[in-house]
Image 1 (tube, rainbow, N blue to C red):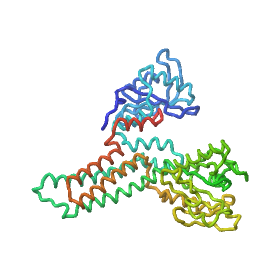
Image 2 (cartoon, helix red, strand yellow):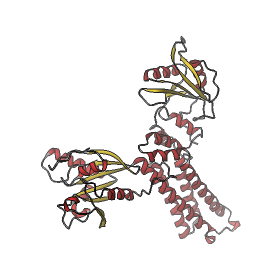
Image 3 (cartoon, helix red, strand yellow):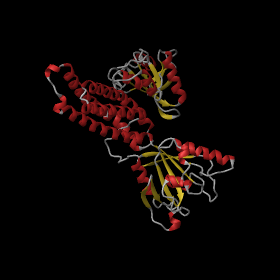
Image 4 (cartoon, rainbow, N blue to C red):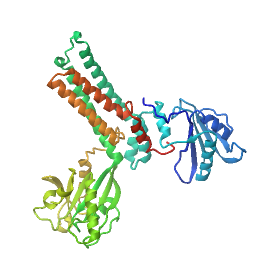
Length: 461
């Protein structure tokens, strides 16, 4: 386990409730002096995990500061593994600041962001995925994301990774034994046992990777940029997807000159929808800036919806290359594009969806809402979203990167086995795979990584 300088024997204190006014406000202390400090403020002889109603007084002149409930959780049976005390008083910011200052005058110091969770991790109370799940649970923007974070906090993701690490470790031990003790005449290539286990681990890892991608999608969402020519109905589509009149819609070309953003969700998937200025040649300096920003937003998109006015579309408007020739001059990434033929109600056409060349083409009406369900379902399928069924867990980009590397090393090991039968190279690939998986739960980590993760937490966590 990597040791950080923050686990230094200090007693830390912080306001654990959200900023602002509330019915209840909590001061949390953790460390060797947590109980003595709380006893001086409350005068209570604490009984573990028992709620004591008491008065909070100044240690200098016994002036009454507040009254409320105090609870003590002696280590190691606490969240951080240290002695923890919570002082639960009234939720006014002034009184909470007074109580926090009192704790610091008695020997505590202000906690750093995420330091409570960091101490829990360093004291082996939780692993790194569970620590991150705490922040994910607090930051959840949808019900599905919150439920997934709860699953991770309960160890669902950790158990999957531990099972993979155990399988890889067992196979690595077997291979290295065959290398180190050749007199035992273990011919693992001829037996086929190693290849069979490699394939089984690879299948298991692909399943976990798929679940992690779902969890990451529900946590982070997808950036969806709506682009197209002026008056194609981009702003109308934004309004239709959001269910509200967020964007101004007029028959005048160039109405949208700046980037408009709206956050919506489809079956629990957060979508960060961006409406952009119409793409065309313009002498207007303001409109030119809007068009420049539109291309900039598209460059960072996860998915682009190219809106076409179906009443003006020609036969050549079958794919994104023909109706959007400038895209290759601006884009440096291969971003998925969906072509939307809008205003089908004016042509009395039915909603439709079909694949043409390099893009999916959907016929709909942003005005009447016909075909919007086709677009929503297509967006879910395009990101590999299956359903919001139980059994998923919260995941982050770094988890997916680690799983990608682990899968790569596993595939390389399989190639070494099938190609040259090089046991030493296979053993090294298995070691690298094990190392990548260990980064996820924190069994292999660095101070820089841990500092980055915990610095994004709330102060009181």
